[in-house]
Image (tube, rainbow, N blue to C red):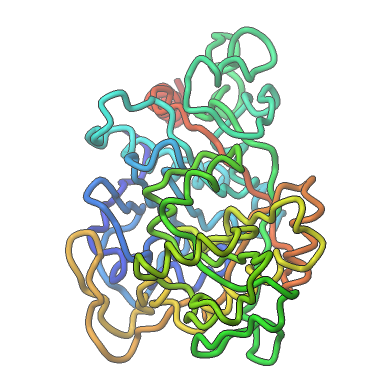
Length: 425
């Protein structure tokens, strides 16, 4: 399409993209972590508005994304724009807005043209996660004021259209096409706002930190012990949340759980001396589940965020949410590779791998985990309890984010308007 920057594939993003993302931490942390996650299927694509050529001079303005449409109904796409880092005064400059908007549209235009994944009934809606709120006006245009925030964004086009004030989207009304900014945009629905929290790696002196996997169950209340979540328990966990989750994804994530033993001493059970988050043998798993009730859990998501944190109602008020969170984040800080994240490259060394960036790359200088053990958590702004947990872990507030569903069928229309604006049409 005319008047858009090119969208370049990065078949080896650990080498060609992560060096440009590292200087923009913490804004790039979710995208950086997602690229570094230990699995990346053939259906995944990494794109940026600069070419995949290692360079010592990073572009001053760009956008980048990771997308995997096979992940539906979960989050399919993560995106970053250098526009996010600009001071408010510069974000208000029309030229900078226009540049950032064109970069974002270039990536979405490329995504809309990717071959369909294995799901033959693939929705025209793309679920884009943890989107910085400052990017919403660039993608939604005049539609933004008509969108009703939803607890969970929809991938059903009819349900998404029902989330508008009025019968038609502004982008579908002819009179809006002449408005400044091109009228409507490409966002079909958006979530309620979430506050992004950034949590530093816990020092080993903090309670419930577990160096080298040594158990400290004595720091939990009596009859509780740390554990992991087993695959046959995942459907129970999924039922506890309205957020779309799949067994396949959760089974691939690092988890920490707490079990309650009503009539047994957990110190005498095999699980009480287990190492930090890991898989158990089947006999251990069966024995543990017979003796202990799963009462609290949390996962490290593919983007390195704290996800699915939950404590059963009758076991709340005892610090279990903070305990599982701290233990999980300690594991991330101690060895990010052990919990599923590969080293990234800062431009001083290798990073190789196969076409999806699945290799460990060259050894030597330039390799590190990129984030120094930092983690993040997205907490709904009205979730006071979870915000308290994040604060208690030493977290600091960042910015607000949304989940949105992008109507890929509208991208070409909006891109066409951009071309008309550039041509004075």
